Length: 124
Ligand SMILES: [Zn+2]
Image (cartoon, rainbow, N blue to C red; front, side, top):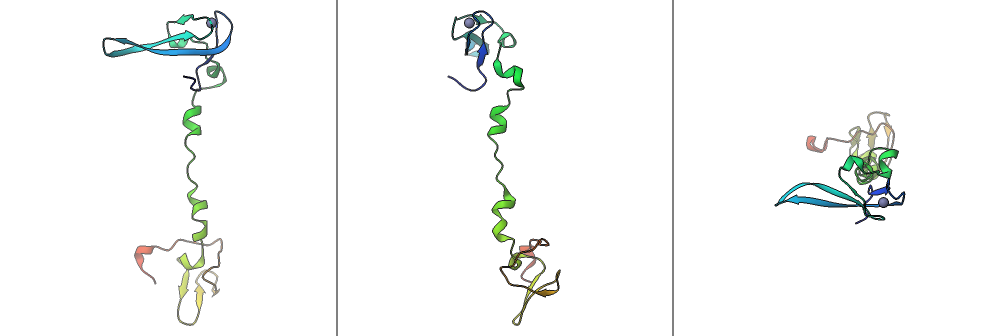
């Protein structure tokens, strides 16, 4: 397994290599991990003895931060920032009106004063 974060520079053989992590079991209980240099086979007894490369550069949180590309809700709703979806938009048989700008608007207009209409409040 070559997951990120198991790159080491071995303190014994000096190799720029990987550490092999193997769980240690006592019976069925996992009591820890064994760390072995993939190059020379030196076994590190404790994880904090393993000369990880990523530890020097910073906390090994790469997996966590890379994995959370929060969907940009704002961008995905961009097409809904139209006057027809706006709380200030009023439509009657004769005109479409914006309460903020006090002028006629088109349903497909957009502006920086857009406020999403509360759908639950009804059409008015
Ligand atoms: Zn080694």
